[in-house]
Image (cartoon, rainbow, N blue to C red):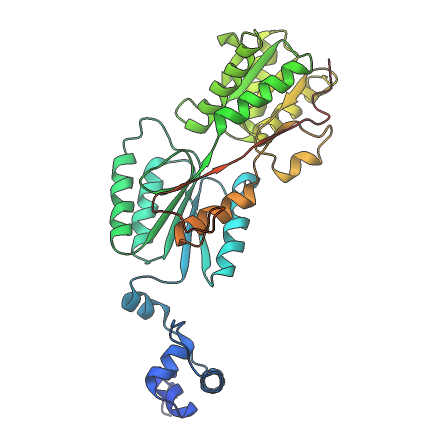
Length: 351
């Protein structure tokens, strides 16, 4: 008994023949060409492709055009609502431009970030967006910039989210200014004895927020002793362990500022475990305004970043679809500054 003969997949030539159009017309109808095709012809091509089960060869298109319709988004931790909210904004903006988003996780590891960028370059994405804080003194930063510059030299587009990353497009987050405003607002509520649970010293976002918060307290004549600054992982568990360390020290504090919201959630849990009512006993504040902190009890005081807008802006800056107030397209390497807002909630009642 002879083996069954497998049927070869339909080709673009087959689709053109089936639709009764030229190969060029079939290609333009299916491959997103900027040259317009008569709608009747385009519909005939689409129907022929469906009948034959034809699918476009995305890799072949990438080779021909120099890029795919893919956006590569690099995040530290997709389980963190901060990054998932940014991703939602990137995806929303990409849908409007007919692009597809893939997500890679770097785990805040500089070497993994570099290796990921190198691997992604081989897949020819149209855009790479790097979300998350830069690290101070990274041995891989220069190599990363070289890879991204080469990617842009071959037609790709790059955008960063967080600190200024010139000459690349950057959605700039004012970590110092937002934390400074929060400190002033909390001092106005009557708080005087502060502690800060911050991230590892090499994470620039954590250090900028600590610097801004310290500066805001200084404006009100309030010191922040070094022993009340605790470095921990930039995670919920880091906030929990940092709060336990603070409580074990016996420091008399009336407010704990955690430099991001997921850390603040860990602080709230540690306080409850120690028999302290968050807010009523010790106030707690965070930063970012991830969606979940509006629903915990008490609701968390924080600094609001419009995270989905951040993602949208990053994609639009990279593709050149963003416009300023005058309707002009941004210049290459332009930064978009994102405004923050202090949001006072139940976790910091007036003292």
